[in-house]
Length: 144
Ligand SMILES: [Zn+2]
Picture 1 (cartoon, rainbow, N blue to C red):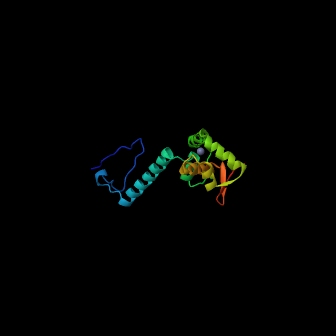
Picture 2 (cartoon, protein in one colour; picture 1 turned 90 degrees about the horizontal axis):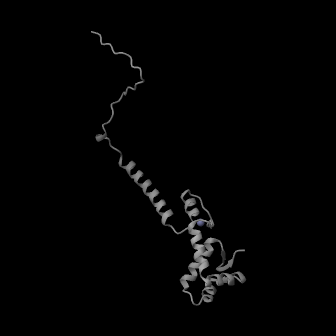
């Protein structure tokens, strides 16, 4: 006997190896662990960007393995730091005194006698991070 199969009008694919049923498909554990690690890295990067208190440009640059030395000064974090800095008069007085003559960390702390030591140090670190001041050999001066 002869069986006649009419030619199809559409293209067809013939699999030479039978397909694995999804219920018996096995993904190697190392592949799953790699995927999980990559997902966790992405979440950590996002968390750092959203909740971080550093310059957004610096965070993004770091994500792409680049380095931005100074904060951008225009992102929400930089603006918030600048506003915070401008709010207190002791801070502007300290900056004026540093501009007149460079000061050591201890001299700055003594000049701000009514302010907590940690507050003065944090303020100066922010000024250094923003590039408003520069430190050389323990002496802080105002960047011109
Ligand atoms: Zn910024």
